[in-house]
Image 1: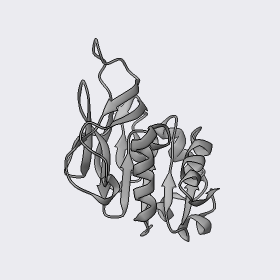
Image 2 (image 1 turned 90 degrees about the horizontal axis):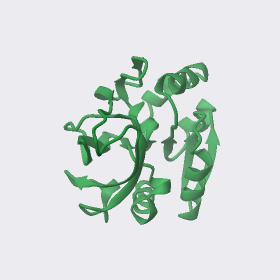
Image 3 (image 1 turned 30 degrees about the horizontal axis):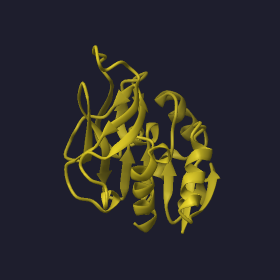
Image 4 (image 1 turned 90 degrees about the vertical axis):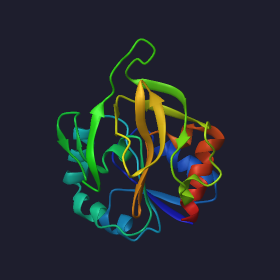
Length: 196
């Protein structure tokens, strides 16, 4: 099994690599377009700001190549948000692989921003990425921006309002939560991704 993790400058590169290798995957972290394009699977991680992440991808010449990938691609946290058309964070134009904009979470008395901690997943439709993941399973979130629930949402989470927790369009999947920090649920999602 091979997975290339895009070197987008995120702080979660090492933990994602370790989580995948624990499942038996051979992994590599790379910002080289040829290496990424030839991988069996691609992981687009991200921690930080959308504008900075897109600047790094553009500067490395990866944007067009990422849009054209045909193998399974998994965006994680900010990496999922980058799959959308736009992020309200700095009004950043993202990859445009999923319609709609990512918007800032609205704080509420029991829902401070950023959203950091464990939250339940609500499955909305079946998908191979979620095989073995049940309604009510918990995953670990750390984010201030979120995607709306749309026809591309596979699972949602409730944080003041419903937000997309897992999305898919064709060969592009995304998890707003960090599977590498989500114990058994996250390991199952990553294991399913390696089987796609």
